[in-house]
Length: 269
Image 1: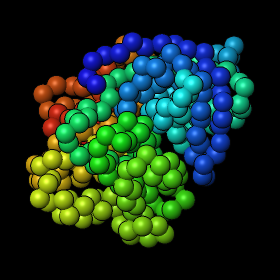
Image 2 (image 1 turned 45 degrees about the horizontal axis):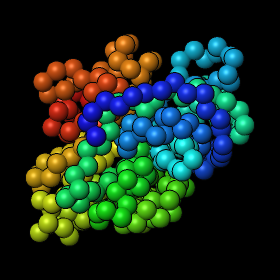
Image 3 (image 1 turned 180 degrees about the vertical axis):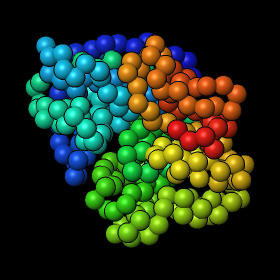
Image 4 (image 1 turned 45 degrees about the vertical axis):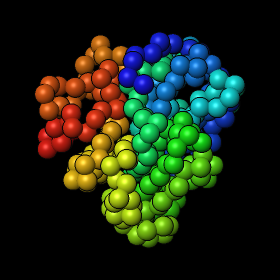
């Protein structure tokens, strides 16, 4: 999945748009050209304005949450500012422009057991990955949040066949603690076969750093999906730079998925 794939700027109809939790929404659009080329871990630049309007000017980057038959794509997002607030008010039947698929997605080996680890909104790109792995390999998915109400769509993950493990900081669902607490227990359980696993993670920077360090200590490859503010999504604005171990990396062009070894974690994001 490392090769760059054709991207499309497609006028997409909103098929469904629902609020899954407080300030968390699932947007489903019909975008057959983008959908046909999409791979797990890639993202789209989505307009957050009605077609014909010029405000706000910049699109917003959203991970592809899921792909369905009929050329439909879903995006899971949190309402955090003016742009996503405007988007949250759009209704089925309205049109918006979607540029994608963009970036480089997750690298999945068919002979390796994937462990997916998502914290908070970091679950957004992982459902598509769980769907991709469904039926062909055993998969574990660890999802964590501050409280149970933040963990939306657990049944969607379970329907893929992945074994879902949950952590909440307040103990309202699953293990009381962090994603890393559950991961530590899982790695101990899989200790004899840990060399046949790979970790794919997305979430807050401190969580991903901790997951990567745990993976490194166990000799397990770890792929991380980074989030960043960006204006273009295609590498022109150079606004999504992060420190790599050898050079400056750009999330939109060389990511958003990177091998954990390539990130200079101590410098933050």
